[in-house]
Structure formats: C-alpha cells, structure tokens
Length: 321
Image (tube, rainbow, N blue to C red; front, side, top):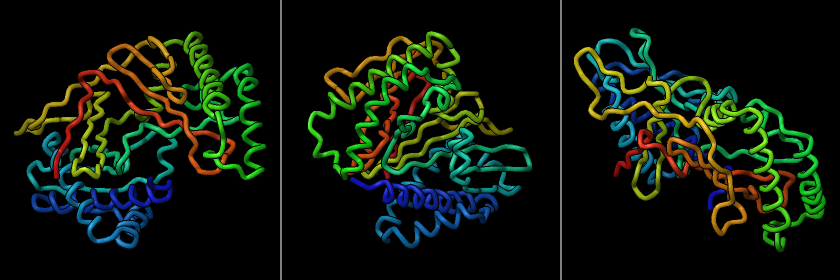
C-alpha cells in the first residue's frame, strides 16, 4: 500500500502526463499553449524525477486514452483548428474554494472551458477528517455541529491523545472497532441526522457541493488504474459539458445529472463496524469508511468517502490502454 506521500507524488506526475497527452493529441489540430506556473513545475518535477521510465510510459498511455475519450465528448477541443487552446494546472489551494478541477482546458476566443479532475489509483470523493475540534457540519454543509456532539466525541479523542503520547501503533490496539470506531460513527450518525432534520434540503445540497465540487463548474474526472484501465466520469451537474460545435455534435452524449433532494437513511453497512452508508433519493448512495491515516495513533481519524450508488445519468467509461 502506498504512503500518502507516494500517492501524492504519483498523482502530481499523472497530472503532468495528462498535460503532455493533451498537447500531443491536440497540437496536431490546433496550437496548444501550456501555461507555465508553479503547479506545472511541481507536476513536471514529479514526473521527470520521481517516476521511472516504464511508469512514465504507462501514465502517458493511460492519459492519452482518457483525453481521447474526453475529446469524443467535447468536440470544441478540436473544432476548426484556427484559434489557440490553453492548458493550465490549477494550484492545490484552489480546492479549498470547492473547485476540484486540476486541469483547465480553455478557448478564450469563444469564452469556453472545461475542467478535468485527475486521480491516480483512487476514486474517493474526499478524505475528510474527524477530530475533537473539527466541525464537519460547518465545513460540509455550513451548519455547525451541536455541543452535544462534541461532548460525545471528546472522551474518544482524549483517549487517542493519551495513546499518541505513549507512541502506540494502531495495529497494537485491541478492540478498537468497538471502543473507538463504532462510538465515533454513532455520534456522527446522530449529529448528521439532527442537522438534516433541522436544515432539510440545504444539508443535501451542501453535501453534494462539498463532495463533488461547489464552484458551479462541471468537469470530468479521469482516473488512472493499474489494471490498464482509465476511468472517465463526466460530472454534468449544470449542463455545461458536452456542448456541440457549429458543425459537429459530440460522439458520446452526456445527460444532465439528476441531483438528490432528500436523505432516506444513514446506517452502518451490513457486518461492518467501520463504514456507514448514506442513501438518498434519485439513486444516490455514499459510503463513509473511518480509518487511521497513519501506522501511529493520531488525534484524528480519516473518512474514505466513496460514491457507491449513483443515478443512471451519472455514468463512467472504462477505457483500455
């Protein structure tokens, strides 16, 4: 299993591979300008210095497959070939504003752009943390968690603080599911339900914006998989993707996604003490798996948040390379 640092390095390298793929494929049709900035420098350094030649080749093959698929959905990338296409990498801190796009593909002459979120071997929506002081309600939905919630989780995290001071390892903790994970998830479930009861659809809308992107821009998610598959997922929430040109329609049609309007239930996954499943209408279901992000005991825990149920309008393509 890769460490967080190794995963970050490969993710950055893959971003650069996607930029190279865009330039190689599109420059045969129109001029492509790559914006030189610090984000590009970092990604380029990861690709050239931290990834061996064989993996570079795999990343390029994967990126080309994904980019060609996106082009089949976005004919404006290659339309007419007269004006310039601009490609830029966004800084990491832009994600704090809810913009999850790593790469921007822009044609300024027609005031058009699309974004691509690039992932390497993981499809998680978020890796959010819980701790004694972190207010998930305020961060996710804009509604603060109650004092009751913080009182319930305080003893759990105080016990983790004592274990951290002793230098304990997670693997050495017996019964951690019953003593730590389940009580924390029970408190999370109760607070989540309370926030929804008091704020209704605002919680649903806030959650989707937080997990998928809140800046109002649709985008593609492009995921490199080691089994020689590139996943391409269009998040067409606002109907911005898949625009035709004057002379050409997209080869692959993308419907606008129907968003959830209400929560049906939030319960533990069957036979699990570490995962809860949130079920919503319109086919949406999201899993929250709590886990330790380090071999050493820390004073916070991470969620691995995955989309496990999706509406028919939200599809993905597996492209072989």
